Image 1: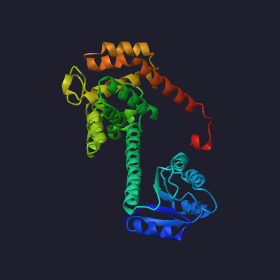
Image 2: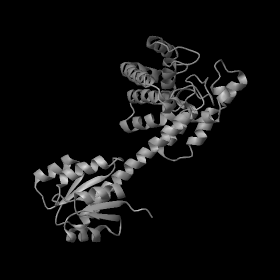
Image 3: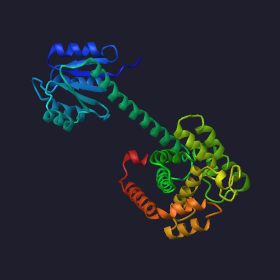
Image 4: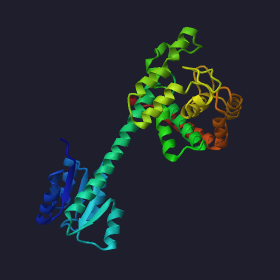
Length: 341
């Protein structure tokens, strides 16, 4: 069983013994009595948390906290001061140095256990969220591994989708989930042959039928997870090629029968595709894109989503501008052996 490591720092053996008795049944413990031992222990054990006294023989706890933070390459080590200095000045200095909490001596065992558990749970929650983001990144990029789209396409399109969803009245949590789910809309392209994805000209009827299977493939991959973000991504993957007038695929859904998430991503995806340079076309200017989207309102796109798009057009243009600058900056980086491989 994995136990998080906690480093306890105090120059008084009695205080170390007290903290050992409070925490030893729940955590893996390491101990240090001064600044040098602390820094060596941080490198050796990479603790999840440091319980740090302020008054040490060779340094003060504030400076030591800052040095611990510099050594923490994962940016996840939590520092809690455990000290007899209980005035507000010392407490404020502790937080300024980078600590997340401040426990006064003499310590109360229930308070120590509760504070330690609470802060470590926040670290675990952050790690879980990062794992979700990593999974999104991998699935989103995997869906475009064999085609000519750049990695920036999926994230730029996701930013468009978030802004349009907000304009449609979605709450902040739903908009954030949309931004995570939207990049996975083409995950099903993993099941489409590379010769079709990279074909420079129009697809024939047989190739087009094969291409259209990617929506169902994506749904089958993403729906395996019960996590809300992947359930939303599965819905989008399956339905983002449906059209408001019923002429889309895979099932020819019409109007309100198409999930709102897919109606939003359908527009965001077209917006981004038209603004991109591809092997077979130059990027369209924004006024031409807007004209095209307005003309497709009520046929390809939900008129209410088109209205939302129009209401936030300046923000969408700014997103496109920022991404264009980042892409240009990336292209201008000098080649190195690593970059040219």
